Length: 544
Image (cartoon, rainbow, N blue to C red; front, top):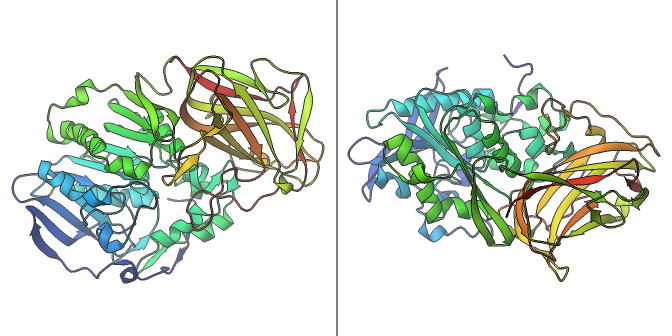
C-alpha cells in the first residue's frame, strides 16, 4: 500500500492527434513477418491494454518487449524524429516504435517484438502512472502473457532506450518467472535524483516537457507536474519511482554512455553496479545514444546476448569482458578498452586542490575566491597534465562555501578538457549536441545533507529530505557528485573545473535538454580554498 494517493488529470491531447487509431484487431503478413495489431491483453485486475505483436510465420519465437508510453505504432506514423541525433532512419522500418527495437531486425532471427500501450496511455484502459510499482506489476503481467503464448518459446527478454530502460529496472526487480534476460540501454533508475532535481535544484525543461510526450490518452494520467510542484523533497512518492536494483537477479547486458549528463549516465551505471545479477555485462560509449542503439554493430551485440539467453545459442558472449568502455579523446573519437569490474579495477582516486585558478596536487595557502552568480560570473580552476592520463569513473568535489546575501546557493559544476593550445575540446552531449562537457554536477547548498549509508568516497549521495539554509558569512562544507565520465588527456592537455551559479551549457529553446531556471542565488558567493579549508576535486585515474 502506498503512503500517498496519486493525483490524476485529463489527457493533454487525444491519441489521434499524434497518429493513434482506435483499437481494431488485425492480422497481416509483411515480408514474411506476421503483424498482429491491437491485440487485447487483460491485466491482473481486469483492465485491458493493447499491444502490437510482430512474429515469424512459422516456429516458436522468443518475445522481446519494449515497454514505454510513446505509442506502439511505428515511428513514421507517429511522426517521431531523432533531432540531430545521427540516427540512420533510412535503414529503419516504419514499424519501429520510438526507442524500441526494429521488428524487421529481429523477427527473421527467431524473435517476436511486442510493443504495448501501457495502462491509461493511448487507447488502453485504466489510469496511467509512470515508473510506479503499479506500472511494474502491469509490465510483469505482460511478460507472463508473452511467455505463455502458443507461438512463444517461453523465454522473454526486455530492451529499449530511456523510458524503455527505466521500466526494465522496475519490472526486473519483481523477477517474473518468464523473464530470462534484460538489455537496459541508457535509462535513469532514480527519478528524483537523476531527472527531477539535480542536486536538489529543480529541472525545469526536460521533465516539464515529458508529460506532453506521455499525455496521449482517452482516460486519465498521473499528474506529474502537480506532484513535482508540491513535492520538493525525496518523499515516499519519489521513492516509489526509484528502482530497487539490488532485487534484480536476471542476466543483464547494460549499455551506458558518458554523454547523457543530466539524464541517463548516472542511473545506468548505478544500475549495473547495484543489480544482483550473477551474469551481467557493461558497455559504456561516448557517442549519441539513439544512433548507437540502432547502429548495426550494436544490434549484433544485443543479438549475441539475447541469442544466448533466449535461444540457447553459443555466441560471442562467452568471449566478452565483463566491462567494455570507451576512453574519449574528443567528439566521435575514442578507444574501447576492457575491465573486470565497475568502477574500473585499480582506479586511483586522486585529489586535486583548488587554488588561485589552479588545481594542484597539494593544498595551497588559505584564500577565498569570490564570484557573483547574479551577474553570470564563474570561477575556473585548471590542471595541466605532465603525462598522458585517463580519467574513467566518478569525480567528487568538496567545497567550502559562503554567501553574502540570501539564505541559499545553487552550485553548477562542469568539467572540461582543454588541448595544448587551451581550446575547449567538445564531446557528444544529451543525444543531440556535439560541443558538450566531460562531466557535470549540481548542488543546492541547503540540500547538502549526506546519506552516509549510501555515499562512497568518490560518490556523495544526498538525502534531499529537508533544507539546511545558510547564513550570510557562514562557511560550510558541501560535497558535490559529478556524474561519471571517461576521457583521455595527453601530456600538455588540461582539465578545467568550472563553478557557476546557473547552467554552464546553454542551448536555445526549443532544444530539449536539462535546464534549471528556478534559482536561489541572491548575490556574491565565495569558494574557500587552502589552509584548514581544503576544497578539492577527486579524480579517477586509471592505468593507460
